[in-house]
Image (cartoon, rainbow, N blue to C red; front, side):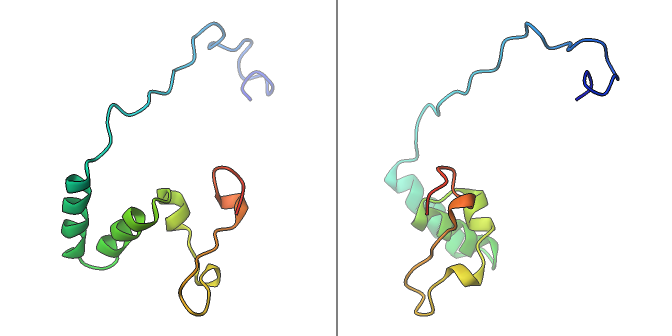
Length: 91
């Protein structure tokens, strides 16, 4: 953008290596997940319910945060996330 708009003559980042994304060193154990869930159970609404929903669904934070009532079936058994909000672009 800066080069295109004439604010700088050349991209100062040319030749700078891209950062590599590191995978996590470990994942939570079942007992650690249980401890987080139990702690979330005593938190006030909405933070406790939000953390429990993240744990129960395994969904990404942004996917759960953008949930709207229209995505929940009337009988509360199914949540359908629109593909454009999913990382893989699928429902």
